[in-house]
Length: 410
Ligand code: NAD
Image (cartoon, rainbow, N blue to C red; front, side):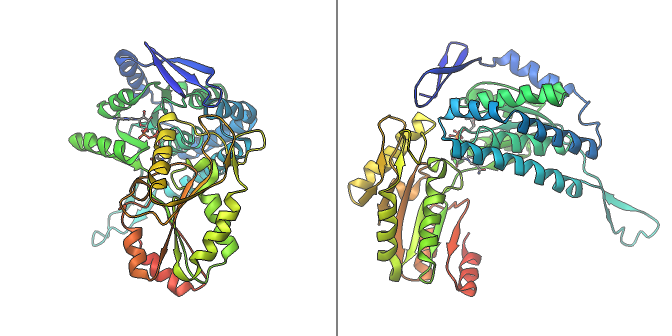
């Protein structure tokens, strides 16, 4: 368990120890209405100039550095991630804030346009805030995902109502405390705690002007349908099957290590985790031998473990289901695992048939499936089977061939 609904409270449990690490009141209809109305009514942030907004976001970045130890402990408590994965998340967030503040200065500034035949007129594009952004986030990166969405909305002059995942709300609550203490502007950004029904109420609210959703494709479709009723703008960052392609002239060591890094970092719980590897037939056996030897030395859990805990129980069940199903018909090679129900041994599934869940659904765990292909047509058919890749990578030396394949990946 990582979260339990108990009456009107949400109890957060550490996924490894199952001990309570936090407890929050779930927002009810009245809290939702009041919070959204307060954020809607605030004009202090939206009336700031773009350069002032950039100044405060830089201030937030400095504050996150100052409070790094607290953020680290909170992430560890609510996700069970190992220190390495937490540091990657913190540094990614800080880098994003640095970069997006630079981009905002040019992307959001007034830009001139030609006035065409109307030579006596001037034309320009000026970006205005939309209003209140409803940010709904998942549990796998409780710092990076909400912070990047919130900051992008704020830089554009919007106010924000955030609903973090019910499984990992603690880091968001800490971010809000840091924001209030170090930046101020308390009413332009508020949090609502709860499950899918709270998210749904945010999507439905007439006072929310845009939805920024990060999460599963299934919930993304529901939100898109809800938004369509009022033509509410929405940004959807969803899940996928993230293939990696290894061509016959690829550097074997590099591609094996990249597959392991891409598939196993954060225990595979990343939207762009490599989930499946397609290897050109002439090097398939060599690739399988090398990666199989490497994975046997990789361990999940324990004090000396390489991989950390799974974060969310339902997702852990899904990953185990995918592996069990594959074991019925495929060779499965596994690293080791220290006891504990929330750890999964790093896993390779060889040659799964196209009807298996591991081929058709996002697995979201430390599992890589390996398949061979003999020509580009066969490769593209396999790549397009799930219909939604999200990310993909390709290893090889022949740039012409790589670019030809990349152009055809949809
Ligand atoms: P999820 O879709 O189950 O939940 C995401 C959020 O939506 C949670 O806060 C949840 O409470 C809320 N929600 C649930 N039902 C809702 C509804 N009907 N209306 C409004 N909100 C609702 O996803 P998850 O399990 O938390 O996260 C894992 C998924 O997120 C994976 O598929 C992963 O690939 C994806 N993800 C994508 C990105 C990206 O940038 N593309 C980043 C991180 C995670």
